[in-house]
Image 1 (cartoon, rainbow, N blue to C red):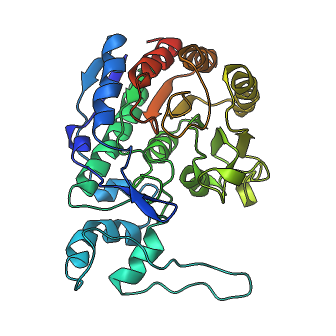
Image 2 (tube, one colour):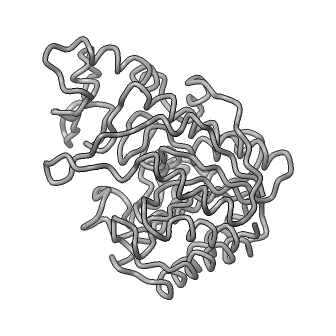
Image 3 (cartoon, one colour):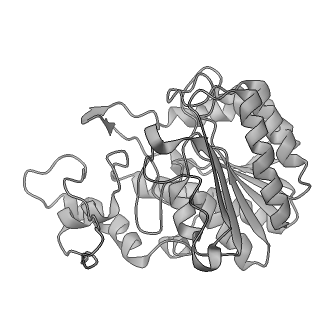
Length: 343
């Protein structure tokens, strides 16, 4: 099995994120990489560095205006008098029924409110290089699968599934799983995305919501009382040509192995009906019982069972790292998942 990892991904060191109006230490820190690497070593994976990618390649799923914002934000923010050390939105571009669409502002303050969906995605001088490294890992993973590999793990950090075409949120800047799926689709592969992160992958859903060529399926904590709150409900099934090609399976907080694996069976039934050539597994490990977010209560055995169930699909798998934060079992859970997948 091959693991793809870009050293640039270590460079992003977020100072904190906003919770209940206060800035608290961020769990999405470089330390995650070393813990995940313990899992990579445990399964004896071959480690490769991906070739670098540019913002132009991120345009596979991201808007040009958003990419220009990411490229210029740090310098423009630094010109603001008496500004905070990094951008935090103090206004958001909210739409309401009956009102005309919001207009795109020229002000960097307004653009921060347009492109940053919450207070958990600080953009620092090294954020964009790290995000491009994460994207490079996922895209090179897709290239390896296209070349005949049947199991590849992309250690993409920062994660990506909350990033939509034009918005960063939830520790995410570029949508790594969506980029990989789009690259595979454009290469002629029928692609499904299965997201097992404890949080709903709202950015991934938004990118493919009106499309029938990529199936998106997500198991996650019910968003009625859990991030991202506004998306991830069972009624979200796609729109237009994409109707029926998005499946959300929200589960109660605290769900353990047995109930989770039962829901996973439903998810995989839908994947089988789609008959993909390849699966992108958005591999969030924050469903673990000891993860700081305390959403689900999965065990090591649960993660291995997820891997075995996915492997039984009989199609190549590109596992792209999403959540999973510093805890005693993070590396062990990754090793369990990869072992179940056949590593």
